[in-house]
Length: 463
Image 1 (cartoon, rainbow, N blue to C red):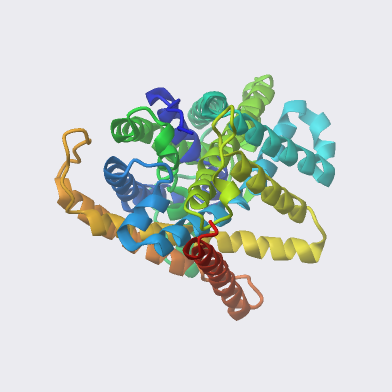
Image 2: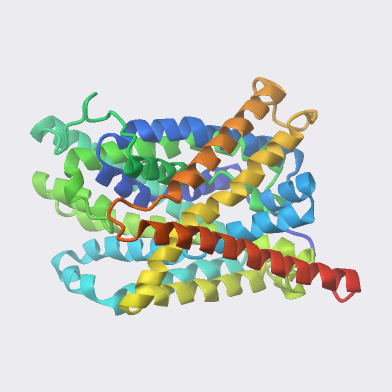
């Protein structure tokens, strides 16, 4: 059964916007203070730009369904390809409950004071998270011809909400002065352990351009559409992160930023200052839709990883089956929805389980960066490949690719090391490091075991 090329240039641009940004990172940066602004810029130059160059280069040469799974497989063999896809896929699954809890927290502002009562109600957060997960899965089961509209609505909503935040922040700064002094002294980045951990988080936040090529077989003229779409989306991505953070800081002091609803907190505060309270529920709806759009985009994108692994028979064969009518990887979509649902319930479980969940989520920063080692290494492996007439030419050619891959590889390695450092207030720093390393090793070893079982079946002709 042939994949349907249903994604055009506009769809690709909007996908990059909704998949490469996350309002949660704006809140995290706002809580870190004005020094996060230059860190955003440094992260853009050392992670986003090198990653974008390598994604454009690799997707032009290998535009097949599966993206970095295929790139690693062609560069270093099937085992490297499987581990790249496995670590990426499994590390993304805990992301969905975190994203949907954030959506639920911000959605409380739709009802104004009536929503306050739900803030401490676990059933509410579980219901919203399960509902968002179900919506994202269902639209993707119907195929990208339907699923793309949730992605697109999410991207437009995120851009609109950010513009509203930035305008309100600018007006409040002009009329009342900034809630946070933003100057050369306050923006100076720190180099303490906690600062370096934050740097690794920002490097992680700048990822996302690699997601679109997962669906390379469903994009119209992917060799040109992906590079052009990424180039057109990049300014919007930068504005959302950098200007959005500055706006939050203009409206709320870092120590007062709410980690679960900081964007809506800032918008509601400004709306109250100007007597425009009707803006608050509108903005809350935009933030909610943007989070649902991210959920749909990532559910659809990462489902292509077990899908291609199923085609290669390294995962059970049914992972590689498509819906007979809608040509979607239905088995992969449903499976990851079930696993993500488990994380949703863990997130609202008892204290001890919640503690284990927090460790697992923290560890995903490290495990999520592992596939990028393979991505940048693949670009270094293929950097000298010729640029054919149907490919987008990268300024500077092969040397630009080589330099970008080297910078990206170094940034990723540094971020992995820093992300493994325990927080200053951790009561048992040694145990925290052991947990992160142990969980990362466990994920890789589990993937290796699954790969070896799959390869044995392939060689035995069981398939």
